[in-house]
Length: 249
Ligand code: 13P
Image 1: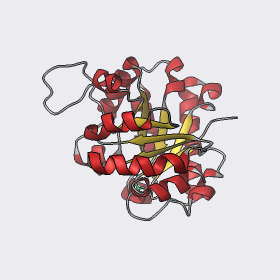
Image 2 (image 1 turned 90 degrees about the vertical axis):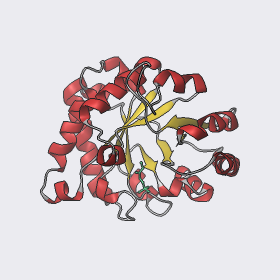
Image 3 (image 1 turned 120 degrees about the horizontal axis):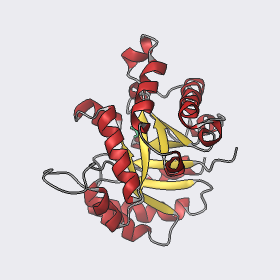
């Protein structure tokens, strides 16, 4: 099954416009021969700069969130149309930090996903269990609930525009990577959950990333797993050399 790998950086709340310029200029030559899709997801304030500086390169730009409404009285929020107008292509939805600190639920993830797709953005939908959930052997049921919630009411023909990122919460920013076996096991389960919803054929085409302390040292082993199609990279995406080494794994 030929799924093109996709490595995306999630900058989180990092990088001013000046820092964005420097990082992208450093990054461009280092990733120009990448065999995978390369994406950088930046804070809203950096998006216009990122789109401008990556024009003509193989780097795509994504946002880190999007609101579900087309427009209206939602102080501080950003709509899908606003992102599309900027030239943004991807958007991270349901990151665990948003679930943890900003009240994100499976229902809001679903609403954001629908709005993103409707506007022509490609959602990167994040799922993953906490340490406590893993220790109670609830990983599979937690992730199943997140997947079923995220995909509720989404048409099968939209699947080609969606990427899923499995990010165990306990592996994010902790330096504690899931073993390649742990990551592969859950990602394989996610593919089966999607197969239950849309059939095996479409599920086999869906790209599913691993995220959580992925770095130049562990990327090859993770990417060697049959169901892992890429990575969502936090810390290591903030340094051009590190991110390029992940991209060129
Ligand atoms: P780290 O790579 O810093 O662990 O972050 C992973 C992540 O949350 C990407 O979305």
